[in-house]
Image (cartoon, rainbow, N blue to C red; front, top):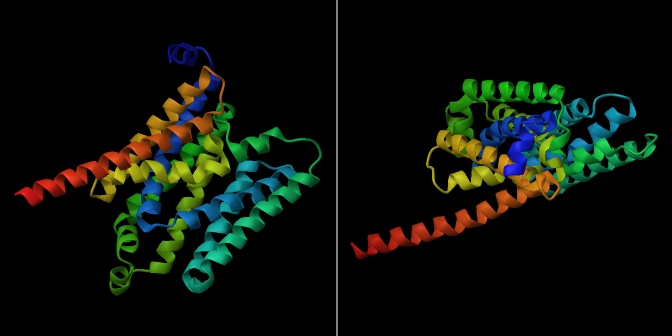
Length: 281
């Protein structure tokens, strides 16, 4: 840890990496709370893995892979959202097809692009140490958009994720709000790509929020707790991976996973203790 702190003051790439993890944690905590409460992890996974198609196409045509990821994530979110709303009896199969086709298209574009592109592989598996100042600005902008949407539609989104029938009775545009939620997931996926990669993005999107949900009873507090936990996981994972030169994204997820298991055991023990106290009284 001391070696990491010493290097942090010397090397800008570590400073960029730490800042990237903190910025990603904001969107992760806010949107991840919606994903966990609404239980749409599978839909979020479909959006995340479809992104590879846009990244491969952007690289093939000489564009920025992150911008390609953003375009693909938005299109995938709209497609998956409409599938989930209007073809519910086949939703698992159709989302799995979108998931697989998106990755297959990305692989095809990569195969036709001359040279070996390690940068694209870093997006697949994550490399927080390669975050650039330009990507930090993009991440900050995406965070701003997400926080702006939450500020404007907090109560409406809350109604949709907790009680869709109530939202319908209140004449809220439920389908539009659901699609907006998936668009927020799409933006968050792009935020997390550089930190942990497409393969692990759903874990970092859901684990901090799931842990926060063990100890909070309001959506607002869940978002704050998940954001703080995401910052703790990305910072500690980056520090732990620095000395032994291990993949930072994988270490971040291992830390988050161990924290979730410990939290689940602690929260279960607390529930049992409270139940015994109620029975005894």
